[in-house]
Amino acid sequence: MMKAPVSKSDVKEVLITHQFKAPVELVFKAWTDPEQLVNWYAPDGCTIEYKYVEVTEGGSFHSCIHDPIHGECWVKGLYHEVIKNEKLVFTMALSNRNGELIESIEAGKSEDWPKETITTVTFKSDGEQTQITLHQTASEVEAKKSGAYQGWIKMFNRLNLLVDLDVTANK
Image 1 (cartoon, rainbow, N blue to C red):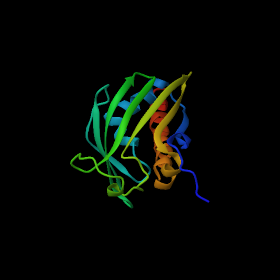
Image 2: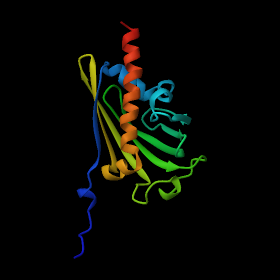
Image 3: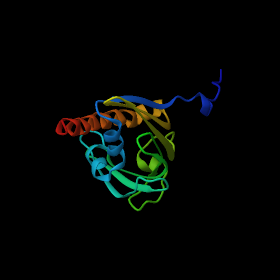
Image 4: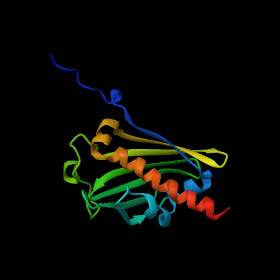
């Protein structure tokens, strides 16, 4: 018996909600300030470098996460929406060091990983806390297989520490 093909609309995409013990202004700034991004926007044990990053509507970035086990992962993207303290929408496309787009397999991903995803992050103020919801147009199953899903969780944990230090320092 043949299995029916899975349509794109049937694929559960990455959707993560996370609560931060910091005001929305601090959390949003951590997502948009290049000096803060380098301190948290990579999973534990990894580092990130930016060839360039301009977090403005129409701005772009080219970055590399350096992983001591899996090597380099170069990504480029464009910021489609930047609404202060409310929302970020940006693309993420696999690239090489020179910024040329590459296939998923060339980047060490499964052939089912999309060459480009759209990531939407919404920020919701809850008093002195902030809830973010991240949606990425990639299969949750593939994201868990590749470690991308777990990477987001680890980065949010690093961001928790960063914004918690800011909150504590300002008390």
